[in-house]
Amino acid sequence: MSEKFDLEKAFSDLDAKVLALEDENISLEDSFKVYQEGIDLIVKCNASIEEVEGKVRVLEENGGTHEFQRKS
Image (cartoon, rainbow, N blue to C red):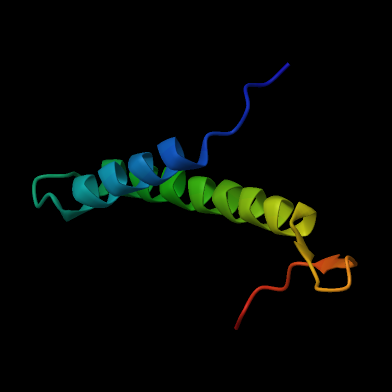
C-alpha cells in the first residue's frame, strides 16, 4: 500500500529542485533528471489539489451544498 501523498512536502521538494536547477554547476544529465522529477511532482500535486477540490462542499444559506468551483 502506498503512503499518503503529502502536498506540503511535495512543495518543499519542488523548491529544492528549483534551487538545484539554478545551480550553475549542475550537469546537463542531472538537470534533466531533476527537471523530470519536478514535472512528476507537479503532476501529483495537481491531481491531489483537484481531488481535494472535488470533495470540498460550500454550505449555502439555505443549507444546501454545491461543489467548490476553482476561480479562473
